[in-house]
Amino acid sequence: MAIKSVGGSLVSKIAELLAGPVKKQKKTETLRKQEEESKEFQEVSHKAPPQDIQFLPSREFTRSESSNEAFEQIMKALKDDNVNMIGLYDMGGVGKTTLVREVGRRAKESQLFDEVLMVTVSQNPNVMYIQDRMEDNLSLRFDIKTKEGRASRLWKRLKTEKKLLVILDDVRKVVDLKEIGIPVGDDHRGCKVLLTTRDRSICSLMQC
View 1: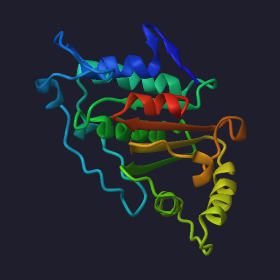
View 2 (view 1 turned 90 degrees about the vertical axis):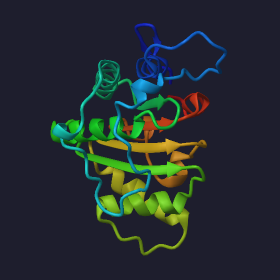
View 3 (view 1 turned 135 degrees about the horizontal axis):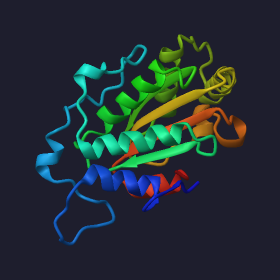
View 4 (view 1 turned 60 degrees about the vertical axis):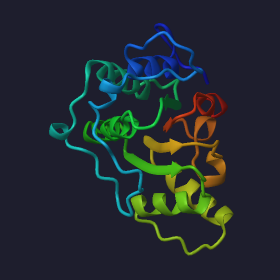
């Protein structure tokens, strides 16, 4: 669904905030962030953790004014019962991963959600790999070999959480949430998905 905010959809607003001041030159739909602004963010690894995600403590994360506004926009959307899909897009290396890790940390710390899961998707989405990472986070042990069977078990497990946040980082192709086993929308009104991507069209195709 389209998420409206002052100045347009939330996904467009966040991109604008992360991009900061831009020079007038020929660009595609994705807004560019100035080089010096991108240096404000920590470099982060895109390798998915094998265990429960470790969110950054506040003292290790310093937000610029623009990223602070984006952070507040996301937190506001997470508290909105009418929003279940949130997309954050910008070019690579500007700090999207760092920002959503901080969102996850804050959401977990404030008990906004009963469970917060984060998985790095990357260039070639592999359903069973994503299921494995979620299994690790939930301390599940899949004894089922098929992705369909795993999806069914994961679906049932996630439905037991009243308030759930799933963070999908570095999404470069459309992923089928049902195929993975993530209930969202009418299937689970308490589940929200926050995704990061370099491609604005991914946000639209996944109905952010």
